[in-house]
Each structure stands twice: as structure tokens, then as C-alpha cells.
Length: 323
Length: 266
Picture 1 (tube, rainbow over the protein chains, first blue to last red):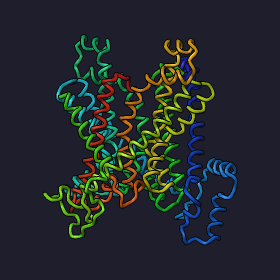
Picture 2 (cartoon, each protein chain N blue to C red):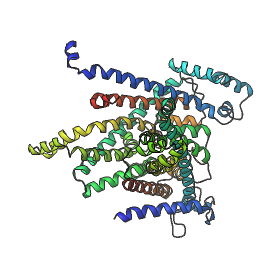
Picture 3 (cartoon, chains in turn green, brown):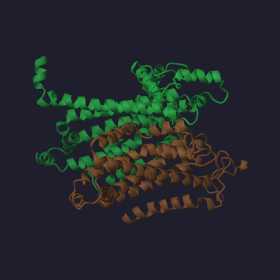
Picture 4 (cartoon, rainbow over the protein chains, first blue to last red):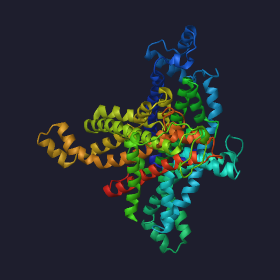
């Protein structure tokens, strides 16, 4: 059975694909190394004495010295960097200055909420964009197309920190359909997901429209029409299927962006994720926790992008040739 | 129809520009607190009503125009200059320089959206200079990437080779034979960049990381108003709608510009 599996793999899947993956992983590793270094340097950007800034004006010199010792800030920069890296590799992100808990525990507690929100936002975006973009492409230059494109322009221009409060005003405060904030049940996910997903749905709808328009001109669509297939079958099985590759890529890249965009959405809806934690720890001057939050979001972003690249190359052999 | 698609957004942006530059000469009182007028809805005498502290919303809106305008143009100027310079060097010289610069750009691109700007302004503290700095740190990469890609392909064009054969110096080639062809794509990137920066500045101010009170920003006005949405929705509606109009206008003009200059979307 194992042999049969290998025989069924193509030449490319066996030879070019692993080397493609390895080269992508290597460049991902260097990027992550750079990201960690940049985030490590952030704390040295704090104007004046970071330790003083963290503890406030009332701190005694003993306290200041103790914290400086604990953070290793009295050592040479390179030694500090080396320690930061080795601790990271051991899964040690330090302790929060505010709650004194290990940061890794806080992250594990908070990350699922952010991931849930990002995936829900992605889902909302697809559910809006797929019908909108398809109708716009199939009914090009009609009122449907124009309205879809107006929606798309509005969607990319509307700031989510305004859309969120508007949705709350309409659906929570006036109609009372959804809770104003928090993360209790499925209903409390709807408005944050809408807020987060709208901008992406606008970008995606445009993208689906232009990809579909290109695909609809292909010979195989004409063949399908000549065979007398129903229009719905042509669109779903022939056009959308071929248009799906670039769409999947955009989705993968945007899932990472949604993780970043979640910061503002989480603040609006008091969603207990990493984004809210980032802003809370900035306000509390809990810089080790700020570093860890930024690190977690950006490393997830990089990893999702790499995964998308590899997935794309696996689905479309043409990409592998060009590496 | 086509005419209005240019006329209306241009007029909105011109109003924005006038408010930003001539704002201090208008008889505005954005920080004048009138206690009996707290949360008062729009009326004939005060078009947009008063906010939660009894300050006129219209006056604060006009001051906010100034904030967003100066942040947008500050950031665009800095990131355009730095990005173009780095991108040209990277694309023209190639080799190890290019390799290192591309790796550095990859690191900056590894932060989704305005996350890096949030971290930077959070750590540097609030203030308009810090906002400009933080957004420029994020913004230069886009320009550098475009400039690098364009320079790479322009380097081997016949007219550049001809200039080299004639013995023109590198700065001269870059200035007279490469730069003019970079202007169109950079102009389009800058236009969409302005839309992004206006939203980002308001976003940072919404998070409390932007300009410091009592200075006005559309983002902080939205944040301050969210607590009073049910009793005084105008405090949130006015700055949000203004923000939407400005960003929409910039995006519409950007679309038209892209069609006109016929540059393939990056």
C-alpha cells in the first residue's frame, strides 16, 4: 500500500516539492529570526529608562535594580539578545510584570479566542464575497456588477473601529439581537466577525470578480457551453474551480492579516484575545508581555504565509518550476 | 457620470486640504467647554452638536482634519523618500546589498497590518511625532519593494544601456533615466498609501496611542463617543462619516489614477 502511494506521486512531488519546501522553510526561519531580533530591540526604544517607565515614579532604587537584574538590562546588548533567544527556544517567554504569571500560560489562555475570531472573520468574508464577486463577474456592467463594486469600495474604505460601534448601535443597542461585547456564546461572535471580515470581503469580491472574468474567457468554458451544460454547472464546476487557486492564496495571506486586524476589533467588543491583551499590557507598561504578544501574532502570520505558499505550490505545479 | 467620480472626491480632498492648512486662522474653539451643552444633539446654531465634555463637535472635526492631514503627508514624505532610496540601491546594485535589503524588507513585512505601528507607538508613548515615526517605519517597505522591482527591470532596458554606454554616471542614470519611469507606480502607491495612513492614524488614536488630548483626532473622537452612542450618536457618526468620506475619495481617485496611468496592479 505504501509503495502504491509512492508510485502515485509524480516526479515533481517526489523531487522538486521537498526542495521547494526546504528553501521556503529556510527563508521563513531567517525572517522569524529577524522578527524576534526586531521585537527584542523594541524594549530598548523606550524613551529614558525602561525600568523606570515600567515601575513608575514611586519605585525605590532597590526595586529598579531588582527589575533591571530580572530583565537582564544591565548586561551588554548582545548577551541580552542571546539570553532572549535561548529562553525563547526553551519556550520561556518570561513572566508578566503585572500579574507575575508565566507569559506562555497567558498566551495559551488568550490565543484560542483570537484564532476563533480570525477564522470567523475569514468565513464571513468568504460568505459575502463569493456570491457578490461571482454575480458581478457573470452580470458584468449591469446594476448588479456596479452595486457589488460600490460595496467593495465602501468596504475597503470603512474603518473597522467605526463599523464596529455602528453595528453595536444598530444590532445590539437598538434591535437587541446580539450582545454588546464579551465572548459568551455563538451570538457574541457574530458582530466581531462581521467587523473584522467586511474589509476582507470587499477585497476578495473584487479579486473573485476579476479572476472569474479571466477564466470565463477560456476555451474550456466555451466547450462546456457548447456541450450544452447548465450555466450553474459551468460556473461552479468549470469557472470557480479554476479560479479557486488565486482565491485560496489570498485567503491564506489574509488570515494572517486578520490576526493583526483583530487588535482593534477585540478592543471594540472586549473580546478576550491576544489583541486586547496587547493594548492592556501597553497601558500597564508590561513590556515583556507586549513583546510576547507582538511576537506571537507576527510569527503566526509568517507561518501561515509559508503554509499558504507551500499549499499553493502543491496545488499548482507551475509555481514550483519558477523557484 | 465619469466627471462626477473625479469632481466629488477631488472637492472633498480640497476641503480637507484647506481645513488642514488654514485651520488655525478659522475662528474655531475645539477645546472650549460649555458645560450646559454636554451631549447636546446637532442644532441650527451648532451644526454637529456637542460632545461628552461640552465641546463643539464641528470645531473638533475641523481640528481633526489637520491632525490626519499632517500625519498622512508626514508619513508619505518620509516613507517615500526612504523607500525609494533603499529600493533603488537594492535594485540597481544587486548582489549582497540586494540580498540583505530584501531580507530586511521581509522582516518588516512579517508584521500584519499596523501591528508594528501599534507596538512602536505603544512603547514610544502617545504624540503626533511618534505616530509619524511608527507609521513611517511600517510604510517605507511598500515603496522600497515597488522601486526595487521596477529598477531591476529598468536596469536592462535599452535606453539605460545606451546611457551607460555613453558614459553617464550612475546618479545621472538613476535621476534622468530610471526615476521618471518610477513616478507612475509610486504615485499610485502613494495615493492608496494616504488612505491607509489616514485610517491607521485614526486607528492608533482610537486605541489611545495617537495624539494626546486635548488635541483632536477623528479616531479619538470615535473612541470618546462610543460610550454615549445611545444618547448622543452624533459624536460617533460625525467623525466616522468624515473619515469614510476622505478615505473613500482617496481610494476613488487612486482607482481612476491607476486606470489613467495604466499600471498593472502590483
